[in-house]
Image (cartoon, rainbow, N blue to C red; front, side):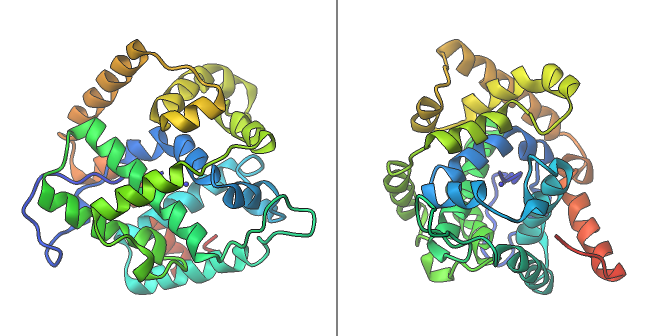
Length: 283
């Protein structure tokens, strides 16, 4: 799962900061595959997804549904009320109960493990910060701190305990470096990643039309360690081209009305609220 959040320079405090005005919907799609690779490069998370028996949540089988549930999670975690977060947590918990390692699993895992959920939340935050800076430039120190504190909900909306979130951005960066150094992409997980990167969950015409661009963007948004493990190439020219593209998109989105700029993230929050009113399944 990647985050579509953008924070502009401001002097907002933790009390009056309103993240609703700082959403970039396009970032959810640019960074999605790279963020999934980051999350699943922790071996227990990777095998948890690979071996999952919950077919309804598999992106290779249900790409539209999986995209909806992932973006809804991001929307409710960052924009939803406490009640909405609790409702979505309960819905996800029902799916996660079956995600646990078996006797033949290469590593032990449990979808309710708070340490694994911390890693997933850290990937979402790191990806959000990285794309924000690429598209809009660095945040000022005050805004960066407030954004970081808000991002804690990416984990606490599930079972990550508040005390697990690194105390500040410096502590987070230490956590990130230490845990990124432990990531390993085993061959079965790498094969899954390549299916994802090559868009094999979609019909052949979609793969042909968008697969090359998707591979290129994904490679550019991965940390170098993971890009190397995937066997992806990346040059300085690629880096300049991606920087120019993201800067241009950021400049355009910066001039859009908030509701347009945030689409489709805001739409998935509206969908969640409609589903709750109608008594429909949330996940």
